[in-house]
Length: 191
Length: 219
Image (cartoon, rainbow over all chains, first blue to last red; front, side, top):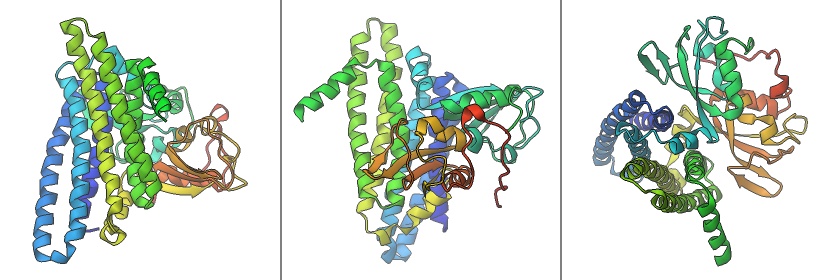
């Protein structure tokens, strides 16, 4: 994968993550999470500009690549638009317009729900890495963020170790939510 | 045709704002998955489904606007509702972006070789597999299997004897020979393939017991 492609990959992954974060900020009417979306949006803008500059300079040197470069540009613009949509959702929260019950209910009732769970002292998830427990493939719940004390860890990677008291915010199907909570509160003993 | 359209929009009017918004949120997520999948599998058919969803989103957005405007009585209502309208517009905007993505199908394949790479390397993978006759998945509905909760992969399309079904209803029964396209993590997909190929018995949620051994991710 060349440099432009890697940048486009990062753009795509970030845009999808931003959507999850944006809906989470709305569900919990949480402006800290909404701020993170806005922060990612500025990073997306920078990355988008870099991609476009790169496309132009490659196009100058290799005009035969123009058709391909144009596809990259179109994809980049579509992905950026997804990110902008996420930011406009977060903006609702930041303007203080996100606490209407209809909004919260509409996310709760969604096929892809967002759930919170706190790691209890006797949870089998405690002191284990995300890569080790692989929540996603065992209950369909993917971690969007962890709140540790006053700090958020957004999009935690697989080396992140879960600690007692961590609040996990995860996205997944309703059917996976009970098991997810059970693992966190210590009532589920097997993963 | 006109009758059906009329009835559909009336149905929407009978939905609550919350139901409309939930549907928009759900569709905004699946439409992006389907858009990338259509590029990955070079499927015009799937791209048409995306365009269909895009039109539906537009209708839903108008239905939300209509209902919300009818409900506003006070300044406070109006402020609160503007947030709802913004969310509906954002979901609609996502669907338009998905519509732009599928338009790339018109570009000759040789000019978009990297798209498959990018989708393959994404955090969210899109993969296809087949349900084998000896798989426990055969003969069960998506709902009963709780496919996503059990594997972390969501079925976004499936091909059975009738043809392709996109964003299939949870009540659809999977059968031997069906091809399924899923979205999720690589690890979840590896697990799904073991179930789909019949290598591993399905663990139904209510009878969840000691897990099997799974190999660690490479890398």
